[in-house]
Length: 45
Image 1 (cartoon, helix red, strand yellow):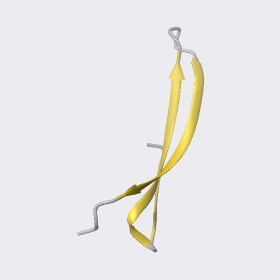
Image 2 (cartoon, rainbow, N blue to C red; image 1 turned 90 degrees about the vertical axis):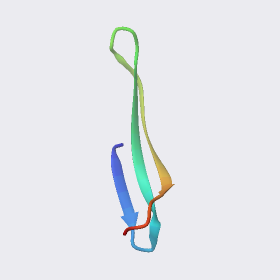
Image 3 (cartoon, rainbow, N blue to C red; image 1 turned 135 degrees about the horizontal axis):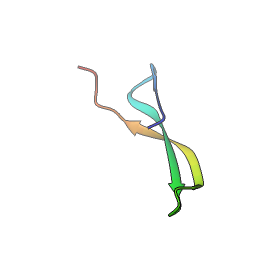
């Protein structure tokens, strides 16, 4: 997980940022990407 962000207007949801890296057999990075997703969260107790 590369990042996390919560909004006051959506207390049960948060934006999560993922970072993916792919390497080949020699350990060289051949692909990478960052993506975001809107995730449901547990309500704060």
